[in-house]
Length: 97
Image (cartoon, rainbow, N blue to C red; front, side, top):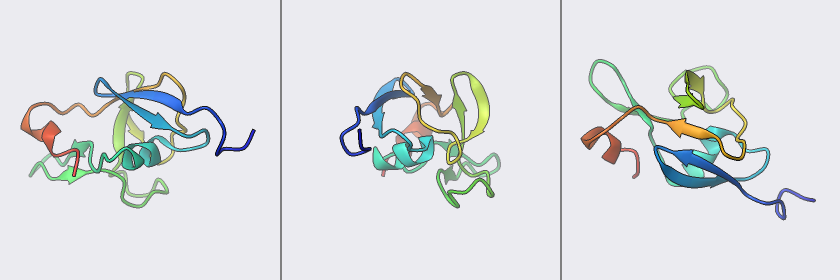
């Protein structure tokens, strides 16, 4: 079965279902779902998401299945995976652009 015909994977992001393709990283799935940022910087609260895409910059840290500080660009998406940004309120509204 080719990736184009494979069943999409269902992931939960802050309680919302997003879809991923087999072989896709968590970061790529989030961006494809329209989620541009899923965390903020400590000092000024600036939005961060996928930046380098190769695991060098650490901008894409996310909680995956209860494990904090995972690099979304390196974690392969898996069916049923639970992703958490750790943000609430107005910060959460900045996730989608």
